[in-house]
Image (cartoon, rainbow, N blue to C red):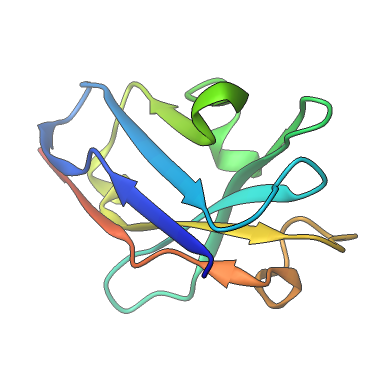
Length: 124
């Protein structure tokens, strides 16, 4: 059974940093793309960035470049999202996702598995 479990969310002040983790289990993910998405209140789900385990190749949404960094620890089957210079508009539920045949990393319908999400709240 595939499981993606996010952790590390919480409340942080604007300008602060936070690191989210996504622990993957249930199959070999070496050929997968691991994506991070977020969904703020009243907003559509938005692509944050992604990483390919076998690369590692990374790709970020436009508004994340320079502030967010995605990395992976293959030995732990864990992907990380390091967020810095956080803004109130970064407040959202953050999800990780895994997809085997992903051509457009920003399309959430190309991912096969999703975690339950972790809440990030940035106060002003």
